[in-house]
Image 1 (tube, rainbow, N blue to C red):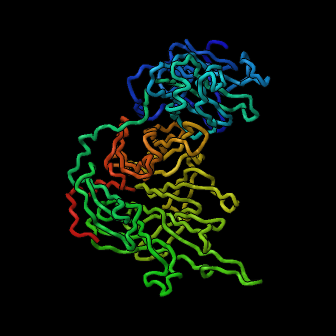
Image 2 (tube, helix red, strand yellow):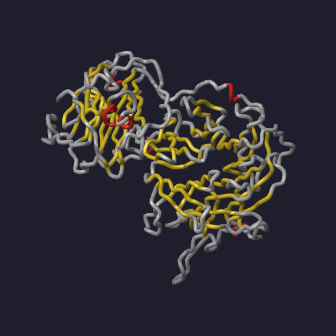
Image 3 (cartoon, rainbow, N blue to C red):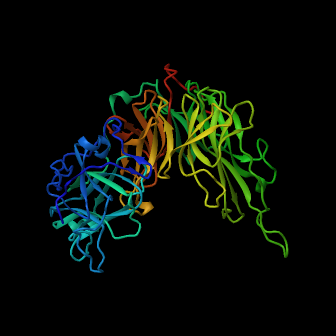
Length: 562
């Protein structure tokens, strides 16, 4: 094992160009003020206290560009020229390709241990992270843990890896002298173009998950910037208006079947749209209840809940009559086609909406048929005839220039030619023109910033392990003019998942839905500049929120609930 030395990084990796671009804005706020058990965690003493083998090196931001470090001047670089040189041999006679390691001691009274580091990765290999007796493996009888495994095939930008040890894992490290190690094992999946940059390594004897901050004074409600929210009340999903501090909650719409989702303000702030769960046939149900299928309407209304109008209705299709009994030699059961709307947003002209419509087959016993379809459609009332904006796509978000971001997805059946990731649909030309912005399935739910240039996405991170059920969600901010260096705004390890993003009118805050560990959900705010976050609701009954645009600033007081 050898001391790290400086490495000059000049390369293009799998289409990922390192070219000296300046990172976007400030960095994610760190949890604070517990001493770091790692010495020189930011590598600013040019690798002092660290050991490496297999050609682990340092990168110097002054020579190679600021995008190669998360903070300061230096970061460690792995993956490149990983040759196993000076690495110790395993008992099975294999040798790791690379190890980055440092010794440390965990206090015997540690209430928890948080291990974190920032990384940026590209191309293909697998990385293991250990806090253990040896360099790269552990024996539970001797103490230590394997913290996780992740792939270097990652979407753009620096992101946080963080895991908190408690319970049995904490017992195996507390009071122990161990090694923190990041390891690229001997595997056939290591490619010459694999890159892993590491910076700001921290091992803390405390629980440093994201914590709630006090509500900023600017978010104290005065009625001028209301949120439209969907709440669960008595088993129903109703539309409310409330202030940005969660106060002054008022019911404005109950829905066709007491089940609304996806609230959206028109750009001028005068109307609201919701997905309104409904049945088909519509508006007159079939006299035989077995022929009435689940469906969706899109409902628009004035800001006070008046003037309710359905502007779109999906048309499901009945399959075989239930219960289905196949006669001898007769046809197989035909599934019913269920067509629903999953999300609705307004276009910038205030007169059209863009929606995601999903269709899937269901048999009488509840089994889903193979296949399915989800497309993004444009609807311009009074016509209920949609125009297809993007096939095989979901979660649309429109900006003021008429460009719509969507999640694209590939179908395993091969019927889709749209790759996974984030696509931009230019609806100002016919047919609409699609541009693939982010070619990675980990980024989803794109939402345009009010400036029409930046956008936020929800990222499914690789932390703390390769097990998808354990992964932490994050919020990333992209600049359309520089997609290579998004900024992580939030590492959401204070709940199970996050979604339903909505920007404040001035773009300084986001609100999002946090699914709590108990399965219920609340609305939280996020300060984009500082990374501070905290709850707006705390009762676990709020499912989604939309922030009223700035075009209308007068006080809004609903008169009647519908």
